[in-house]
Length: 328
Ligand code: NAP
Image (cartoon, rainbow, N blue to C red; front, side):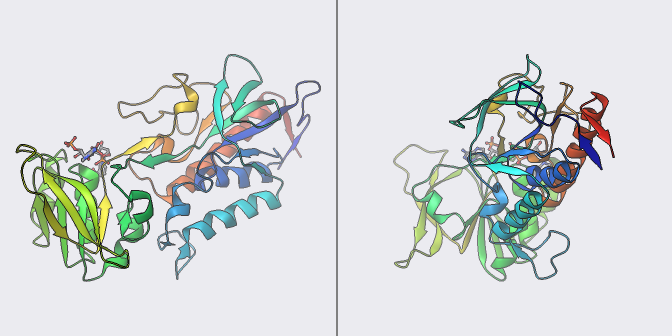
């Protein structure tokens, strides 16, 4: 356990640790940072709780044999962090000036002027959406962006996966464990997915491909329940008739967008826009990275918790190296 020598540096009002984001990664970092006596300040951001708070039941987070509601899981981690002294504020960080030390934070209206000796970026990623009518309404009501989270609700049902990349193939293959039929809707007649994933998907008799098709709208019964997708052909002119694909569930797998806008170009990214790091250490000393904002591969609550934990431990070590903490 470390002790803060000067949690608020005289005159500067600087925080020892600010955490950007309140998903599983950010809140797990908050638990560890709080227990390390850093009294972290968590900016909850525009989606408090992150992507998991949109998920109904989480069945793959270790420790919950009967599953746990996604909102409850993140809320429990928040309560756990607060119990040890973390402070959560309902604001977003919109910019960070890394050119000054302590770093200067720009926020969306937080009345306090915030500075921080260390920052943990855990701002997550958001699933790319299509922008169809009623999309927001359908999310969690037949529309999902996470096959691993929601696939089991579609036992013996018929589902649609939208996309043609590795995620779409992985999701389609995963969904065959539950669904009777999986229909892949892809806007081209060539998959972007790797050959091995394509071959695995083609080998599954439950998977049916709808080539050159793009979703236009959700089909719903009078009670609002999802009954399928209306799609248009992308390889013929505008006059081609629309088609209907009946389904009980629709899974989007058209990629994710990492939430890095607040960073400008300050930190290096990979070709897809995800932050790159050495473990959880960024290219800027004192800045650490956790969770999906740097992970396009796993994107799981369990991996986010792991990197959140590591980022907080690294931040604590770094602050100690700077003479801002000493071990009790
Ligand atoms: P991705 O490779 O970017 O593929 C996205 C897919 O969604 C593409 O097929 C794209 O169509 C389609 N798409 C994008 N925007 C669309 C729109 N507005 N309307 C309709 N379709 C749209 O993303 P990903 O599949 O999530 O993969 C991300 C990265 O993770 C990749 O590097 C991938 O290799 C990796 N990954 C690997 C594995 C694995 O190896 N097991 C599993 C998952 C992910 P177009 O093809 O026409 O552009």
